[in-house]
Image: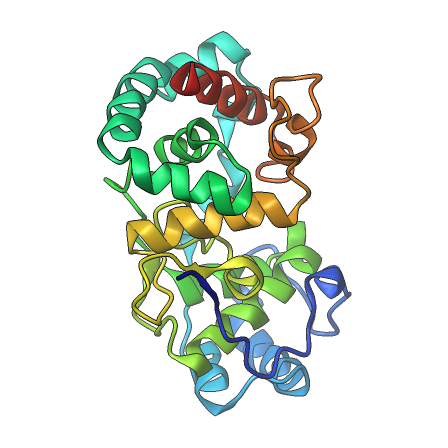
Length: 266
């Protein structure tokens, strides 16, 4: 049975993720070490425990993360080019096979959350190539670097504090590897979304987004909680396309998910 992840001492809600931090941001690594203890004090005030604080103080500035953050060129492509670069044909082909092979699993997700298989499978394929590559970067260092970096520090500070709470809970560790913006698992959840939306999809009593069942159930739960309307369409201009837009801010990404999902479901 799917169970909501226990959220221990969550004093920072997702709605507050935009709160301005007092710790000074920076545009390069020069101020990072001085920033860490200030950010740690704020995290402690936000409910982060000892293990989380120690994790933050042990981070290092992630040049890989900053390089990735500055180089997201594919989102500027036309839809046709974007889908070509992201391997849409392969995702659709593999996605249809995955749906057929695990029909009961995906039917169960749709029965519980209202989200059809095609959307979940398209996201899985887009994010990690169906789990074939879930990242190469230390998650805590990546998310702390983005909290420090001036470009989007307000957005990422809440996610950093969420990551530290996940360390407190043992959901992730200081050695957890993920994507270069601190996302984890098969469908690349940011830490705040792990706290808010992650569920146990395989019934083992724990949440691990490196486990496919947990990750896909969590993805369906995310979309459901964002307002998915069961039985309604999800192509551009249809009711559930607005929910797909909650997954990724890039228009071509949203369109690609809808198109591939429709082809997989079709």
